[in-house]
Amino acid sequence: MALATKEKIKRYFLEVITGKKKGICAFLLRDGLLFSALIYGVVLNVWFFLFRYRLIKAKKSKIKVISVGNITLGGTGKTPLVEMIARRLIRNNVKTAIISRGYKGRKNSAGLFIADEIQTLKNELKQVQVIVDSNRLRAIARAQDTYGCRAVVLDDAFGRLEVKKDLDIVCIDSGELFGNGRILPAGILRLPLKFLERADVFVLTNIDPAKMNCAEIEISLRKYNPHAQIYKARHVPSSLISLQDGAVMDLTQLRDKKVALLCGIAKPENFERTVQQLGAEVSLKFYFPDHHCYRRGELENAIDTCRRDSIKYLIITSKDEPKIAAADVLGAKNSKTAILTLKIKLELIEDEDKFFNRIC
Image 1 (tube, one colour):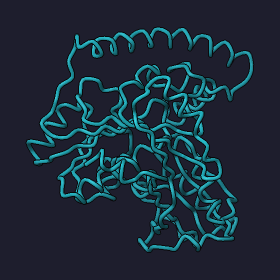
Image 2 (tube, one colour):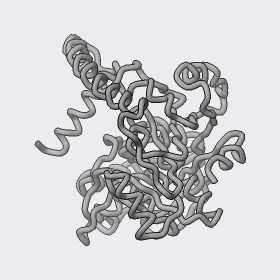
Image 3 (cartoon, one colour):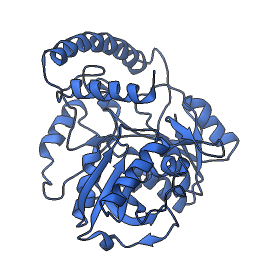
């Protein structure tokens, strides 16, 4: 099946389970997915039961294990939090590795496999060893024995109960929370909500500074976990980097400019809102499914369209940058449109010292 067809099907199912797709077909499909979700939920609950009552024991490592995960489908801001934690550990002279199961990507002209989050972390954290392995226990042993690490940060490992964690952090999207409250494939939950009782820390992401009242979210979380600490965070733009020559641009350069956006992320509306808050006018949007593997023709089409509409800046995300660079499209077009990566950092709104005291 062609990649484009697979992504259209994936997008359709996501619209069905989130209720965006209307009509009798979508209604009937949701009912069918609910049955599948009930079976999946039983399996997950049995798995949870076995570890909760220590019928199967999680394996403890000799080094510090910090997990950053979520309970819903993408877009909760895990990767910036992983990066922030790893930076603090390195600053405290703790040799650190990041462990990820990996995501799909594409090969560049040299035949190297490029995956979005993985390559982004490698680009941003030169002092951190990034290990890609779906077997977290094996990866932790490798970080300790091969690289001499004293701490590891597990990216997307909240549901990995076989690993004993020193700190289990769960990112919660403050704008979406738990969707319809159903697990996959009938909803956006990756795990039953009772799994939340295992969390040590909740980080509420995508906080809107103009709507700082998170009391209802905190009440919802306390139903499942009355003891975990809760922190609030927002994603703030830090810089613009030219993909063509690596030049750094000031964020104010976007003010009152017509720009185009190109991304393959879970929630492009958050990216769009961030660019608009910088004073730019978003004239064109090229949105693709999360973890999209870009074809050369797709990128050339975006550049051509920007040129026709006299748009000077095509803005992309850090997550998309490695795959767009791997598509080797930069030298193919003699275009006056600059491709700019908008760098984003995670910022804790309050209690930052308290949070990092839990980390280090």
